[in-house]
Image (cartoon, rainbow, N blue to C red; front, side, top):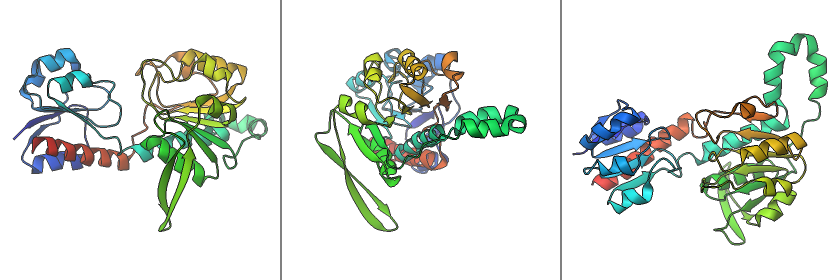
Length: 315
């Protein structure tokens, strides 16, 4: 039986699956600096975003059979090196798709109706400036009839597309791995529904989108920089619930200041867990602390999906 370290937490349902299969599970977090000495005693480790599993750590752990990531991104793991050593690298790409997509729309709805800004101002000004605030926020925008651009048509992007279409939006996607279109399927009131989401060039999407949502991994350089912001439709609302670095934050701030981007919603940041102060303080940027997958439903799905994959590796 294997000895498994759950270092960044896992839903009790997943831990129960592992323990019922006879494996020893430790949930006591080991600090990053101490892992070098202690991980060699384990057969596998499960992490989220906080713990880094790099080459140096892997080299010191000859017994390691798997590295599990509760979530989608594998930025904090030297994946290729681990696999070259025969170590399985596991993640849960499907479990949090809906929760991340819903958070992106929470930002869109909040931004389009000034909910985020009202919440900043009303506690201090609501009693004395109620009428003034009401007037200043009287030019909200509905999502119905607007064009949604989805950058990345993987699992999360497709969930975002479904929600957008459900709200009456026209949806166009950008994905170099998808030619022409992707068919998304879902069920409403026991009625199966499917629709095609066209995959177009980035330039074509930027020119027409009223709302843009990011659902791609960070590949080493921003997907949206000054050149891309210059091609956007004036007044677009931009949301990033993907990965810090997929948007050039300097270019974003410039675009917000000049009105190209009317407002932005960010769940991810370049310098997590210490986002830059000008981002945090900006009155037209809605903020959440990387909570895309932080729903009760998603956490349970992550736990059971990851545990199931671990049991397959250990069988």
